[in-house]
Image 1: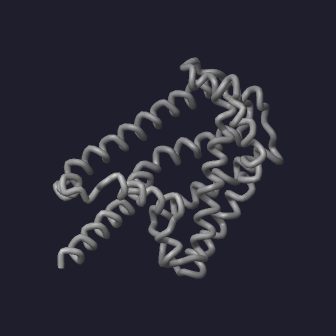
Image 2: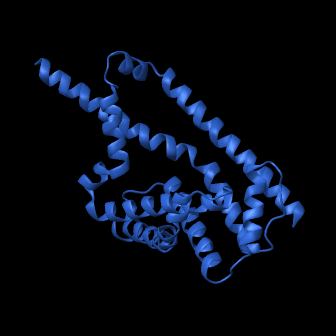
Image 3: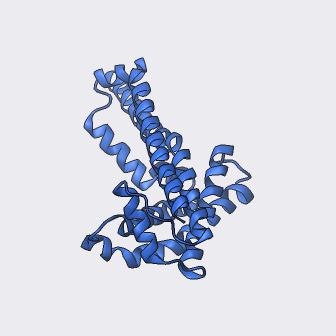
Length: 229
């Protein structure tokens, strides 16, 4: 599995480079937009606006205002996703920090909540809402996340792989010394799904916060106009 490990490791480096490059490019393009620069100069993007936008992103306040039932699933999905990512840090860090160890039980629980939350969102959007809140992009992203969650859960409960081999493989990536991939087809599928997800994320990760920031920016501008009148 040495050759597979090398291919997957370089795939990881390539995807991360694309992710960061795409994110930086989108940030530069956003700052070049005259409307955004004007908003910054007029003070409509103050630290308070950024803080309120961050609060909206973390709490999904705007979704709660329009669809509280869907909000439950989205909050459960994002919270479990964060916990799962933090739990996976144990494979990439040596020694493992105490706070990462402390999060392991929550991370295991999140592994079960994650696919259930995705199924809940899928049913809510497709069956009940009749695709009212979903685009082809989001549908593909949702399907990818479901596959990632299910394969991860199977690796945890049914088709257990060698944790020592997984740890060696992960440490090989972060130290730029590619190690053999674990001898598990399901693990390889899971890792490839992760790479596809990271390559697919920049548009979603960048556009969603900016949409909320733009909404906060417009709200401040609107209040300013009302105040002047």
